[in-house]
Length: 236
Image 1 (cartoon, rainbow, N blue to C red):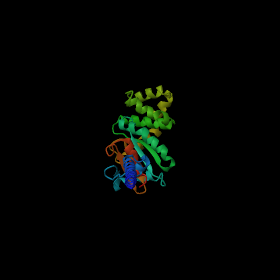
Image 2 (cartoon, one colour):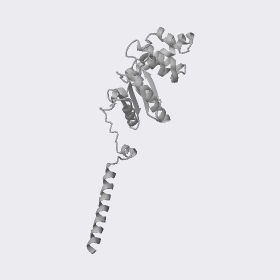
Image 3 (tube, rainbow, N blue to C red):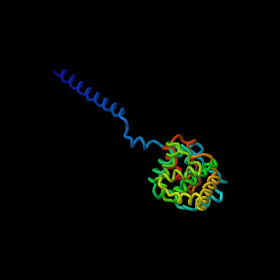
């Protein structure tokens, strides 16, 4: 009788040990919550690999220095783009959402680049849309017109025809195409492009108290990672 009791007791203890071990194994196998996993993932972005620090010569350029003085208390994010650039169209929407999330914490600027004489017309298009307060609606449409509908907007005549279809008046378009203010803004954009030594698009430059930095799709693989790099840069 005593032997049977001892056997039952040992058997019960073995069952308890077995279930405890089983629960431990299951717990180890289960995935950790996403929030916990994210907290252990460090965004280890490195200068020279994911972004470049601009040279002292660039940072001390008269135009660059003057531009940084516009917003002395917050990081500046400068998006150098062109409507003919497909990568720019990919980045544009994502970057605007990112800027919206940042609110007043960053100062955001869009600057059209001119790598070819015909791109001057596209830069003119951007400033016409900006001056007429139609940036929110026509800015994405201009990207789609070129990259999805394959519409030629590289001459003033063809740009005018397109803008008329978008509801603008012919006289208004003629006024802006001949406007000294628009030409001045296009010239200034080109001067900034040269001052920052922008050679490719899209290129995003971040001005902070610690310096000026640039990133682009040659340094990072996609727009999501590029935005993460910007998160890193605005804190420098």
